[in-house]
Image (cartoon, rainbow over all chains, first blue to last red; front, side, top):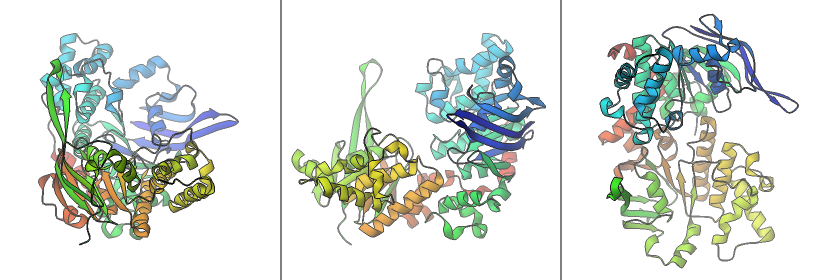
Length: 274
Length: 278
């Protein structure tokens, strides 16, 4: 579905360049969920922006990002526009800033449907209502006319997911989608993402700093550190039997409760956060 | 049992909210909270957003006044003190905030930032004495004394949080209130800052009221914990009692929602279990 080959991203700096992604290769299959985990500055967000062609203009790239064989890095703006939304949906960390404060939930969901598919107003509204129900917004018939400030953080993120789903994309990219949310709300949002992958056969790239989130919602994991891919593989084996020292350090830094599930296999139980 | 350093009794805080058309309704942000914190111990208040935990922290810092109830620090009722007596008392309690970027003035040197609370002392040290205190506070949190001459932007997030802790410690306070003090930090840095706070408790007998949303952090750092929901402390006890044998449904819900590596390998099974169609 998506193949990233030898991707490097750099920004010009006085006297050279700063390489934020360095020779990363990774693939995502249809109906598969890929986790990208790393700390701040690891390059995980730049990788996702590159995948939907939203890198800042000054970025220099090399390598390829192939979506069913076509290289996103060499596409023109028109091609990218139809790719975004139609093929790839994006879910952001902060739903308050990702949503338009002056439009109702229904209008924002319908906007893409009408623009990309030329659907009429009434039909787009009906589709929006269906999507709000799909993301399990309580009382969707009322919420469709609510503005972002009238909703809780969890409801806003559900609207964000509905917008991303509106054009029936094949791939969803969620960049820290639950980092700003309470844990009980986070659980609901991750449940919805899990269902979308399982029921609709969507592919998901889930970017997170939280190994618990990665463990719960991804099939395979890419661990990034300072722009480099330090380790990749099935999530369970990466977290149970990490091969890179950096992955081991990440796991060791988890609170004991969070890594309790590793049981006796915990790679560095003695060196943990205490 | 030794007398508590911090004793909060039946604390309430109401806010008036102005709704559409000028209607006023009252929101009870803190609703009858009582808790005691023994000297030299760490008490965590854990809860989700809007539960009132930050309002509680602000009242303990005397940055806000309660609607009812008392806060006693070392036996003194903070809100019964005269303004002058309260000002003198402020050296005894200091705060560490969440955001290590927003809480340090970028135009001031680290030395000036760390020395700032010294004005709370009657005879604030000057000159060489002042510099010596700053150097000692910085070394206490694992930073070199020379950091005093540099500026916040030269430091990483974890180092900045150390600077904020040094600032909180310089008046030699009895109590530090930490409001989500490690929430904005990368995991590896978070673990280092937690170790630092534990070592300050052990070396200096520091008492900490630690406000957090993160149960995993509570388990790492606290001696006792109170679980807060909708303004109330629904459950209080030692960390082992509350986390290992929760009595309240809400505590169980919080514990169950926490993402851990215990779910490894369960993913496909669960996903194929829940399947309402599109």
